[in-house]
Image 1 (cartoon, rainbow, N blue to C red):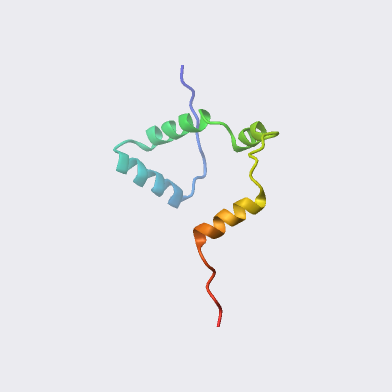
Image 2: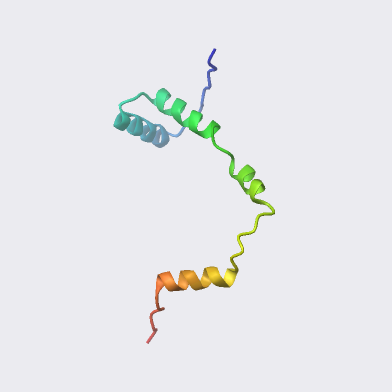
Length: 80
């Protein structure tokens, strides 16, 4: 059997944004929140993801990253 969750004290602008988004998708606010809660529950937390990366190395140095970013950005403008 499903569980019920109640959220109290939502700001008016937050609830208005939820209503707007739900209306755009043609669903109710509870259905929108149900979908988002399901999505949230099915993904790893940022902390768990970062912990899972511990000990992995890409082999790319900081200097290589900066060089690649500089290449993408192009030349810095000259200041008069």
